[in-house]
Image (cartoon, rainbow, N blue to C red; front, side, top):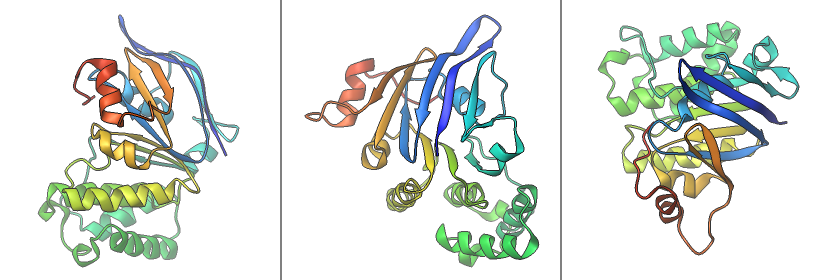
Length: 234
């Protein structure tokens, strides 16, 4: 099981957002860090097939990013997660499950199961517009897991969660990495430090660090040493 990114580039007019990135990701959690405008979200959208590359390719277990077999194995939580305010939490997950091709019985079972997993079981029949920001984020995490993806792309998955919720979801993401390829982007360096077995640092569209950090420093200090305190939020 592997995700192969080969010389991937994306240019917007005169700006090169992703510049000849090549990576091979295997099961486990890989953390993606970088300063504002580094290209992290663009890279994730390319990996999810939302954007088309200017050059290069993306494949998972031999299936190209444009193939149905690729999409069937993909789970994605975007940074700006859209929702339908008048749907209940359960109805929203059933709708997303239908888009992912799950049959009705499986869709209902998985939706109820995941609502419990993310702590929204008692909110299943409440409209999404009544949810707090943290609850909507948890619903977004649930929809990303509906099809039991082997490739999971998470852009700021713990945004809006309180510290206790963050720890809970860190543990969930870590457990998913045992059987899936997980790429996690976040501005919360401690989340990556606790659950990522591999760390990528991106700057100006390129991967400038791939691997571990200095074992004698914590990751936040290592990261700040690379960028002189530049904010990581894009």
